[in-house]
Amino acid sequence: DTGVSQNPRHKITKRGQNVTFRCDPISEHNRLYWYRQTLGQGPEFLTYFQNEAQLEKSRLLSDRFSAERPKGSFSTLEIQRTEQGDSAMYLCASSSITGGPDTQYFGPGTRLTVL
Amino acid sequence: ILNVEQSPQSLHVQEGDSTNFTCSFPSSNFYALHWYRWETAKSPEALFVMTLNGDEKKKGRISATLNTKEGYSYLYIKGSQPEDSATYLCASTGGGNKLTFGTGTQLKVEL
Image (cartoon, rainbow over all chains, first blue to last red; front, side):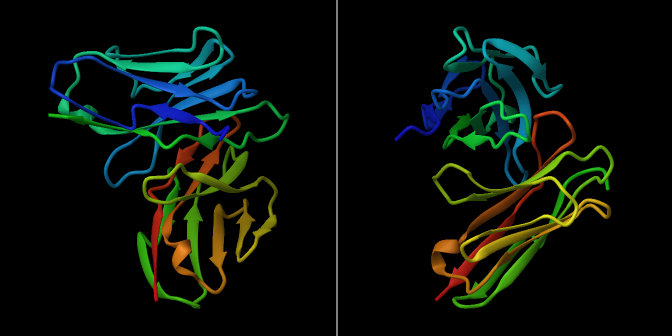
């Protein structure tokens, strides 16, 4: 299977702990996105990379959140000092530059529960 | 309309029924409208991307239309099957690449 993969699929942590999620995009895709979905809402944009450059960050991404894509391939999303409000599904998507609207291909998500 | 809105929030239909959902989006600064299907415990699956007013796309029993002047899109499912049960999400992009999603329509197809 050559789709987008995310690890772990589930993470339970205690408030105040740090967590890190990984996303492996489709191999030839140079754009990578992170979204977050909370209960009853649609996914919300967090940040976006083109190759290794982080080109846009949402105001939702507080200073406790950091994302990297060091070699333009996989990406990590770290949340420091987790809070109960961080409990959500974290989705990663990737796309290739086509000259038109990108179709973003999503991974299965990482569900975070902060106790 | 400032946000992407979807209706209904949930829908129960019988196998074989045809159904449709609505997505409303800001018509100003519009670039593209995307539809996704998201089954529980799976990845959201891209169904359609549409950009032009009057666009119609079809994939098997599912089709979609786009009206950019009034800011809405319809998704139609003909002859619903239990495997169509999922959450259907629409998302718009306004010139950038980030998707702005609606809250989804949860479809349950019963035997």
